[in-house]
Amino acid sequence: MSGTASARRSISLATRIATGAALLVPLLVLGTGALVLGLVTHDLRAQQDTRLRDRAAAVLPAAKALLSATRQDRPRVEQNQRRNLLDDALDVGIRVADANGDRVTEGGPVPGPAAVLPHPAPAGTGGPVTVRAQGRAWRVLARPVAGADPGTLWVTAPVSATDPQVDAVRGRILWAAALAAPLSGLLAYGLARRATAPLSRLGRRAAALDPRAGAVGFTHRHSGVREVDELALALESALARYDQQVARTGQALETARSFSAAASHELRTPLMSLRTNLDVLGAHPDLPPTDRAEILSDLRDDHRRLLDLLTALRTLARGDLVEEEAFTVLDPADPAAAAVAELRRRRPEVTVDLAGPGLTGPDTGGPDVGPGTGGPDVGPGTGGLRVHGWEAGLRIVCDNLLANAAVHGHRPREPARIAVGLRRDAGQAVLTVDDDGPGIPVADRAAVFDRFRRRRDSPGSGLGLTLVAQQVALHRGTVTVTEPPGGTGCRVEVRLPLVGEDAPTPPLPARREWISSTGASA
Image: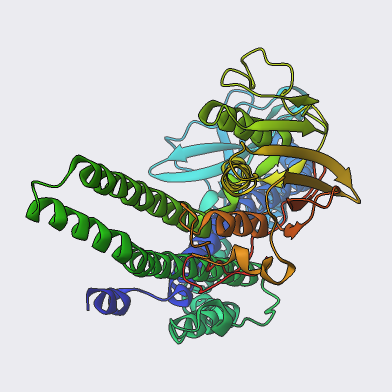
């Protein structure tokens, strides 16, 4: 509700542009007009000064003759020269004074007697100056009258003589500014509406978007306006990321539900066995020591199986939710070497033979042999093989393959003997784990990777090889069960694609449902 009210109170972009233009354009007109008015005033002043110079040049001979007639006391000549002087002056004022400064004659618009007129410049080079008297301003040009009867000629004109032209220009500027406000506003509004039409259409499409459709339901056609197309691209990208996040969230919820369902289903049998054994112990406190020891051994086995099952389910869920950021370029020999060292520590009776880049010759094993302990057979990954992988996931693959071989890959009453190999083949890193056990029938080799597939006498959870298949699929590889070169026992072969140091990051599988599916194909 508040969002709707805020949208109603907001002003459209076109209105904002039109209002800004209606305010800005008149100001620009007035500013430009003030500049033009100043230039016009300057030009009119220059024209007035030029006219004063021309009039001064025209009346100077008559002024000289007037001064001569006045000194010779010739009234008729003086009267004629005064008339000629005033006729030649036209629209400017004239004042003539003799050498003593006494006024001989004047006419036309001239300042009052109190005005201090300028002295003529030497050789008549000076220009008009402004004289103020009785609240008025005058432009006055002084020229010396040379000859036998020297004097001074002043040619004057009021500054206000240019006011009508200035007022006319000022009036036109004001009218232009007054008309510019509505016209510029309407024109700017029309242009802004046209310019923002693609943005409005984009907004309407975004508002009408069905949230369930996501990025697929949002389509944008090229508008030709770069900003609008960039905004549409940003919206599409945001919707795509939102869809991905929704999908990941849904997958996480489904994984959590599947984890709960799988755990409750698989834990029912060991929990019932625990309950039965506890009931027997509680109901028969006088059991013979042999029977009590057997029940306690069963309780320990059930407890271990529960822990193994929960750990495997948690690891399987972790693989379903791993993100691309966890993957880097690494050497597969490193997790293999670490897994071999851990197996030797836990099961010192197992013999492990190693061959391949980063893994060296056979060894009888021991709890203290491994990376960082000074052993000669398991070194760091220096073989030059590079895969795009998740180190923890590759460690899960190696740990589970070695544990499966150690538990199932041995002859009766003999410790297991395992051979681990790593090599390059046709652009792939090939990891092999061989054992000398009874092997797996051809018909059952694909099914061993299904969830909870285990032999009747197996102490495991039935998820070890499922974890291997999951991680190999996440690494865009393959895992198969075959026979060792000798024909006896079982070989599990993992193939992972090799990449260069600067290779682009390949995407992870779109859907990962190892914990929620009933089975997985290797």
